[in-house]
Image (cartoon, rainbow, N blue to C red; front, side):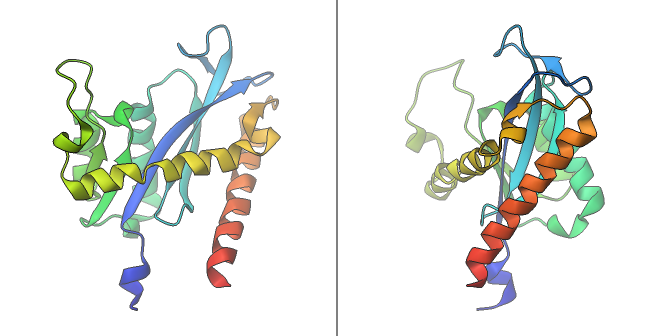
Length: 188
């Protein structure tokens, strides 16, 4: 087996809320959690559920806006991760033309999301996608499992830290622990 076969071909992304108790910086109100200030953790993982990029932002901006900025940072720090044969898989919140143009501009490959079915007839999901795209969208649950790994840590589940750098340090420590756990499973 060559090294190219073991490299991840797909990236998965999602964003989760973190309720804020005492934080002062990078907090905002969100429509889904009323009367509470929140922060958001945005995660990009690969095929092996290893976190590739983690970013923390206010709870106010939309998920696609957070991903737009996160892709810029990731491209500047690790340009070798971007090539045309990759696929970025996300949920329906990331279905925007601006984000598709950005993914194409950064030479990432393609953005695969669930189609926004609010305006139109409700079709079967299998009728909308090709079979390989449908199977990739079913694998998107892996990023949800990665988010659950983060939420196992109390310091990542609720934000009690006033300063953003303290909170982000604990999120990065959780990322490191998840990385060591995942890589340790593949070494053995």
